[in-house]
Image (cartoon, rainbow, N blue to C red; front, side, top):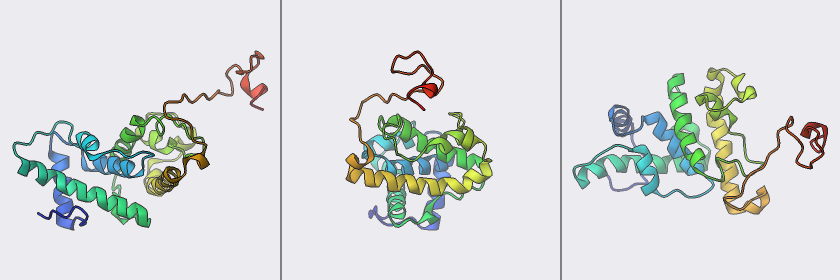
Amino acid sequence: MTSDLTKPLNEKELNDLASFLDRSGGARPYAYAEGLLTAIASAPRTIPPNVWLASVYPGQFWESMEEYEADVQPLMRLYNSIIDGLRRGDLALWTAFEDNVELIEWCAGYLEIVDSDEIWGAELIPDAPSLAPWYAVVGKRSALDALSAPLDHLRVQIPRLAMEMYSFWSEWRLNPSKSGDRAPGAVSIRTGRNEPCPCGSGRKFKRCCGR
């Protein structure tokens, strides 16, 4: 086993990792893990490996350091390959989404990271790309525009949208003030168009300040 964590997995190593994740009762399925790692590589803030490894292996037990390294090193190499692919704009590394089950698992893994981040998950940055397609896929949020598209269409669109997400947050990390940054922990207040206007007029927002 190579100790070079920057070396991409060959086809056999990738298949072995996918088989292990899919069959292990203590690990997430491969598609879920790949979506999770892609979100970690794209997130507004750095998430250290000791945190996200627990998300990939929530119930895994290792009897020795050798067993631990045998399972974790391929995952670290996959993660580094995903980062490299995102930087180059190369989608060849991504799950092919051969069926909708893989798509749903991948998006669920991605959203685990999104929902754990108070900036990303709470949508505190107004001009950030929409997460509606991901939520539509996993059925967590009613998003009419995304839900109107069949899953077959979203299987094609999600990788492109994820690249856009990575590009946006990469730029935001370099200069957050350009994207309307708000302090972490701040509450995002968005008034629905049919809700009372916050100005106190008593009219609906769409008939008052929301016009």
